[in-house]
Length: 340
Image 1: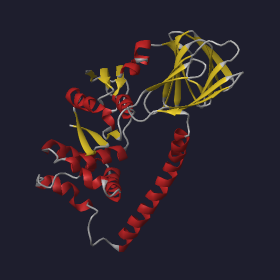
Image 2: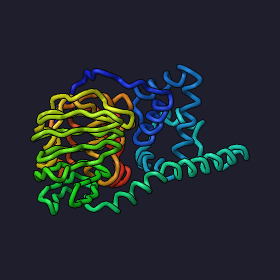
Image 3: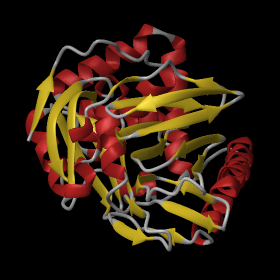
Image 4: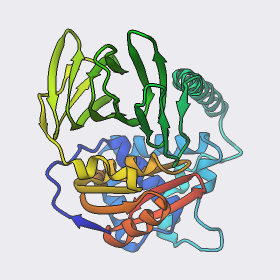
């Protein structure tokens, strides 16, 4: 059960584009209330940039033909005149569009396709690299593997690791996700895990490595490890963790809550004063598809509690009970969270 803290420490700045998208998607998912229509009218009058971005956002979602159509409100629910007036003059599906509008639409679609290729290329490579790993887990899956030297690897959801054992060394690479390593002692053969440009060296110890959002977190449960990255190193003892990014260490060792670190082994996600955006990202690891927060103002709101990782969709229902948000299911794989 999650608890809601309505006083987050930090608020992410909203851009006009963010606000415009929130208004378009909110209006397409359900009829706006009288109060919301007044707020929208005031917002549009606030700056010429607001009106421009509202039109851009409307065109953007229409060009993503399918998503915009999916979130459009149920045709059986009539909208009020004031609601229709808000968007009638910017509705982009006019068959009498001017030639320059049609050209702009084709150009935008071509640009969107180009951007899609640029975005998908590295994702495709990651997918190939993932499937070429020695051991891997799918969405919501967890697994344990015992190596020839007696060491055990526990893989969390969407994780992959490659293993190379020789007479002189034990080299492993965490390609993606999270893994808990129980290292069998062998003074003649160092045990090293490479994770995102860093190396974790251990002998007879238990430690967790988690790659997420461009950073890697190393947590030691038993013994100690040496973390090497970017020409520097830190010795990490049991009960401590540290994080690094591509450009170096993000601070030094700090105490770790080991109960939270290994909760995933029990199928549980425990969190305390965690922003909603981070809670949602964690849930996204354990379910097929994607949960997206459409209102940026909701992202920093903090939560404390725990969820059953075997039933991530049940967590969405709980979030709707403790937060002023509404979940709109576009498909079984895509869910939008919007402010009520």
